[in-house]
Length: 440
Ligand SMILES: Nc1nc2c(ncn2[C@@H]2O[C@H](COP(=O)(O)OP(=O)(O)OP(=O)(O)O)[C@@H](O)[C@H]2O)c(=O)[nH]1
Ligand SMILES: [Mg+2]
Image (cartoon, rainbow, N blue to C red; front, top):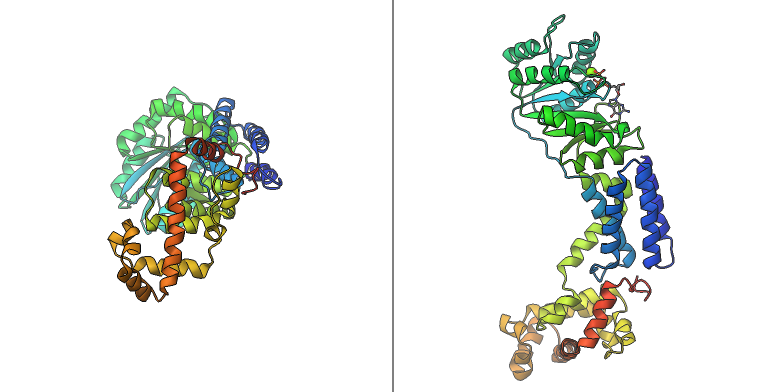
C-alpha cells in the first residue's frame, strides 16, 4: 500500500540516524504530516496527531528499557491506531444485514465477501438481490452467490425491493441474510425512501454503508449523511488496495464516530477482513517491527521502573527485578555517575546470567518475612545457612547478595532524600536526552 510505503520510509529515516534527539523527532513529525496529508487525511487531524506525537515522544515518561527510537516508534504506532478508529468484532449469531451506498462503491462485491466471511465461520448464508434499478445487478449477485456457495434469493422483474426482501425472508432459513440494495449517484430522498421500505420488511440487526477508499475524506461526510437517514451500525471501506487515500477515508469515518466494520482490499472474495485498527496500522508501519516492539514493551512494563523505586521501600524481590531490568538497560551505572551520584557498583549492573540464576534460587528459598525485611537474614546465621542449603549456594554467595542489596538500599535512600538528584534523573528520563547519552 502506498501509504504504508511512505510511512515506512519516514520511519526508516529516523532509524538510520546515528542517534535520536529532539531534532530527529521533529523532522519525523514533518515527514508524517506530509505523508498523511498526501493520503488525504484531514489537515486538522494531522496537526492534532503531530501535537500528540510530539508531546508524548519528547515529554512523556518513557520506559527505561526502550531506546528513544523505540519509544518514538511506539508512540507513532499508538497515535496512528487511535486516529484510525476502533477494532470491530462481527457478530456470529443469527442476524440480518442491509448494505447501502452510492454507485460503484462495492456493495454487490461486499455482499458476497461478507457471505464468504460467514461461510468460512461455518454459518449458512443467504444473499438477497434487492437492487431493482440496474438491469444486470441480480445476475451479478447470483454469479457471486454460486462462487461463495451461498443461497440466493430474488424475484426477476420485480420493481419493489421491499417485496423481494419479504419473499426472501419467507423462504430463507439461513443464519445470516445479506441484502444488496441499489446505488445512486448521490445521496437523495428517493434512496432513503427505498432503504426505509426495505428496512421495515427486513428488520435488520446490522446496516452497513459501503464506501470506496478512493473518495478519501468525503467518506466521513457520507457516513454522517447516511447515518442521519438510516442509522448505520458500521461502514465498510472497499478498494483499500487501489487507493492512496485509504488513510483519509478510514480516519474521516473514525472521526465521525461511525465504526469501521470491514475493509476490502481487492477483487477476490478473500481480500476482505473485519477491521482491526492496530493490525492495520501495524501492517502500514511494518508488522515485524511493531510486533517485536510491542512484545518488548509488554514484557518491560511488568518489570519495576526507576520511578517506582524512588518512592517505595526496597524489597528483595523488587531488587531482583531491578537487577534484571538493569541488565537489559545496559550501562545504567554510567548515567548515574554522569549525574554526580554515587556509582552503582559495576558488578550490580553487569550481573552474569549465572549469578542472576543463583539469586533467583536464593530468593525462592526465603520466607515471605525475609523477602520483606532482609535484615532478618543478616541477624540470624541459621537463616543464612538455611537459604544457602535450600538454594544450593554457599553462605558466602548469600552474603554477597545481601551486600549488593544493602548497597542498593543505601543508594535509594540517598536518591529519595536528595531532591536535586531526583529532579535531574526525572528530567533526564522525561526530556528525551537519553538518546544523546547513548543509552539507545
Ligand atoms: N480493487 C478492488 N476492487 C473492488 C473492491 N471492491 C469492489 N471492487 C470492484 O469495484 C467495482 C464495483 O463493485 P460493485 O460491487 O459492483 O459495486 P456496487 O456498489 O454494487 O455498484 P452498483 O451496484 O453499480 O452501485 C467492481 O469492478 C468490483 O470488482 C476492492 O476492495 N478492491
Ligand atoms: Mg451493485
